[in-house]
Length: 397
Ligand SMILES: Cc1ncc(COP(=O)(O)O)c(C=O)c1O
Image (tube, rainbow, N blue to C red):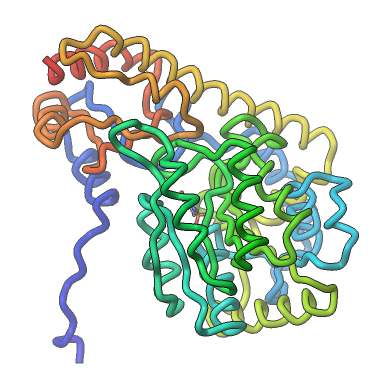
């Protein structure tokens, strides 16, 4: 039987990680992998999470099954984090959330539920997007359409083309939007642009599917939630996939949630029952550990403020590295403008250099960047910035 299978090409980012690991040069730099790194190049466990973990060790009394929706306290606290305590949607009965295995699991469950609700719905995805969106959501059976998002030449969102395309989306289709810290471009929607998309969604009758994997890494926990909070107020239906991988540093614990806003409380109850049945048919139940930690951190005032302070440190470090890299490249011989890096948000931006320049960086200098030229700004630190600067200035000559 297995003789029928062909090997699948390794994910380019994972392939790059393997090559980076095998590189013996001590000055090598990894700007490819999509995880946060501190100024020492480490991806630490946040102290608030570590403290919650040690409390959980004592408090946890069972490893028994938790159910398809995961931990109810986690679900409630995650909704409060997404929408902000006191948001009108929270007491409306129209919003329901279940725990999911990471943002990826949330995206998939959300897609499966939408497919059950309306099999003819198409999914509109901005170009470019996180490459894994296509297999994750496409495998649910969606026909995928595209709308233009980022203009490589001007290094900003192609607002006109995006809005023009959204004005053609039929009623009942889904439109995927990045909540904040757009991956891979770092180019985020302004509040006015979010408002305009909500206007178009109301006019056309499409449903936003918001992927929020970086809340707190752009402008702050509250600021980064503008789009989904506004849409939750104005639109009858919204789907939100959220992840705690980055803002709680819980990557391998697979902690996320899928949240549905329906037109009435009765419909929200039906949607969430479908989400649980979907979970049951794929993985049965989400892993508990990460969600119990998040729930404990969010529910304990001291741990919560410690976590918020740590997250703010993460956000400010990445922002500082944006400024540092941008300044370092200002006087390059190619006369290239890198100021977009300073304007963009979150961990990623496109460097926008050529493929030969990218290859030189890797071959001659041990600097690893994915072929789209997306860089992870968290890979830059005070120890490697000078080497990075000199290497980049050399290939730009
Ligand atoms: C845009 C976006 N959405 C979702 C995810 C999924 O995150 P995870 O499944 O690791 O929680 C990521 C991870 O990199 C992402 O960048």
